[in-house]
Length: 332
Ligand code: TXA
Ligand code: MG
Image (cartoon, rainbow, N blue to C red; front, side, top):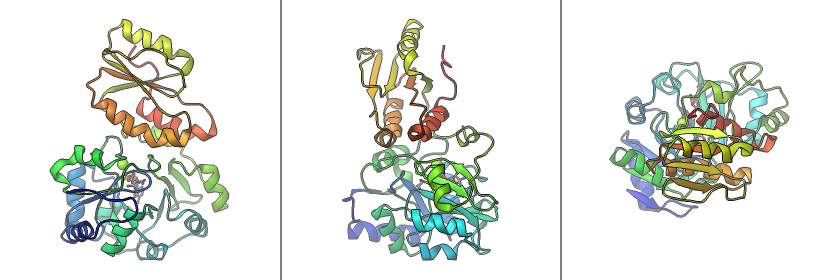
């Protein structure tokens, strides 16, 4: 059952079906402002086991608990440090995940045995409506098979899971299109575990404390994720033309170019697909994964992504592009 809900409320019959499914331990996919989530009852071991199985997720990777209301955090977290509370006050609900010390009753399968629990309060009205109607926390990783790109439309989820996820709440394309920023408050100073559209500067200023970045960039520490199946390389704008010519000469065809600089570099043809992304970072972010998924379905030999600008407002996208295409010119 995929329902084309409006962006502001879930039809009553679908909501009833979704809540019943969650109560009996089944999975329900739902939209958030970042990416679609695959939800299961965070207090039901059998439902969580099924979630790991369907996603193909390694057992060592913990799940984030999604809540509707700030007051509910205390049911899951044993302690909320003052700096974390400041982020909660400013950014929850919103595209932020906090890692906090867990309460003892939180299931080991949620935290993958760790003493900390990931908490997220999505701002999407349909996500909040679903969680409120269910009345309990929803464990919800991104609704993709482990290792693949996060989904930003209900159709992505349906294509990937088919009958394995019979209920998908359709809220249209996700507004942000990139996963939430993750800050780990189990250490002092806190650490940035995943960058996102809430930037380190914004978070540090609000929290009033330093937030450490790992020695390796977050993108580099989790390079096994967010990848399409097709070989992808990134290429600086100044070299894009030469790079495409090299690929054409070497018959790495059919080939796609995902670019944003507003100029036609080549002409579209059977062996060369050109896909232009917006040249503004927020619009680019919203469409990046959907564009890569689309190209991944085109039976291409390779995809070239134009490197995005090396500026603060593009920083998170630069990381994601590096993560998707770690080596420049790796096909040549
Ligand atoms: O935007 C998002 O965060 C989306 C939407 C659906 O909310 N969710 C998402 O979930 O991206 P997932 O599971 O694909 O990524 C969450 C990350 C994982 O890398 C997981 O290992 C980490 O958060 N995480 C969750 N709980 C943790 C914990 N207790 N300690 C350390 N890392 C944790
Ligand atoms: Mg994920």
